[in-house]
Every structure is written in structure tokens, then in C-alpha cells.
Length: 231
Image (cartoon, rainbow, N blue to C red; front, top):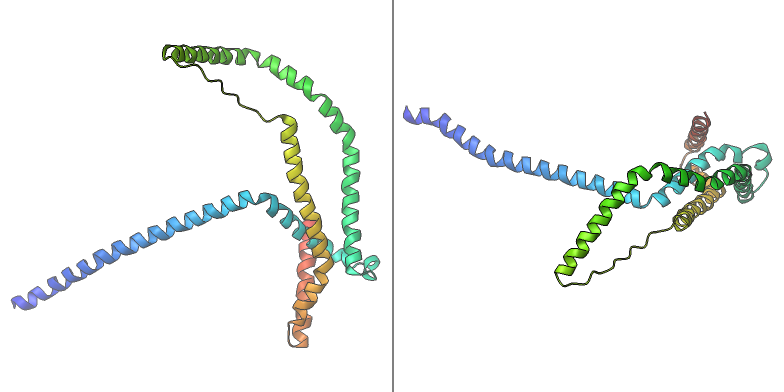
């Protein structure tokens, strides 16, 4: 009787002993997987942040190719080679942008001429706030000089070279110009080779019905995306 009564308790003890370490191991594995997932997400976001000057023009070129793809098959462009049609599209985009810049050049120059006046006005209004800060900075510098003199050390002058406004503007303009060049080149490539890539996808189908279905699906995707973006 005692052996019969002890059997359930012994089996329960064994199951608890077996499930205890296993449960802890599974919990550790789940925590490790969660940590790895978070680290992977942070790495992806950091990479996207560093590559934003490349990701943005590539995305814009892909979206632009979807918008302009139906126009490539319009009546005026249907009789032209794809490379020539793509060149006309890109030149038209550049012409529109040049016209917009020309129209906005005079207001932009007017506002740029008013920037020094606005900066002077802002400095005059913020003088009441900046004076206590300057006084605290001067007091801190005097205390530092006094400490250096007492310690027998000569104060070392630290010169911090601040980046000028013009240098910052030129740096940003260089980055944006590079992104715009990538956008234009990639857009031309996608428009010029779009039909070729489409034909290769269609030819990969074996049966004629599958080819027609693939053609309809691709045209429908382009039309829906273009309509959605225009709307």
C-alpha cells in the first residue's frame, strides 16, 4: 500500500523537477529572442537613418516610375523608343522644377534679404535673457582662471571653431543635390527599361493564358497605383 501511495507523489515530484529547469530555459530563450528582435529593429532603424540620403531618392524614383508608366504608353509616346520617351519625361520634370524655382526666386531673395534684420531684432529681444547667461559664463571663466593660477598652471586657451551658416547651407545643398541626381538617373532607368522588365516577367510564364493574365495584372497594378497617387 505504501508503495502504491508513494507512486503519484514521486511522479509529481519528477514532473516538477523536469518542468522547472525546462520552463526556466524556455523563458530565457524567449527573453533572448525578444532582445535580439529589439536589437535587430534598432539596427534597421539606425541603418535607415544613415542611408536616408539614398533611400529617399530611390523610393521617390520607384513611385515616380509607377506614376509615369501609364503616360509612357500614351499616344504621343507610343511610337517613340522607350529611351527617348523616358528622356522626354525626365526633361519635362526638370523643366517644371526649373520653372517653379524661377517663379519662387524673387520671393526667396526678398525673404533672404530680410533675414539679417530679423536676426538683429531677435537678438535685441533676447538680450534681457542672454545677459545673465553671459554674466554667469564670465564668472565661471574667472573662477577657472583663479583655480589655474593657484595651482601654478597656465590657463590653456581652447578655440572652438563653429561651423558657419554658409558652410552648413553648402553641405545641405550638396547632400540634396546628390539625392536629386540619384533620383533623376534612377527614374530614367526605370522608365527606359520598364517595358523590358515587364516583357521578361510576362515571357517567364509558360502558357499563353498565364502570359495574358500576367500582363493584365501588371497593367492593373500600375493603373491602380497611379490613380491612387494622383487622387
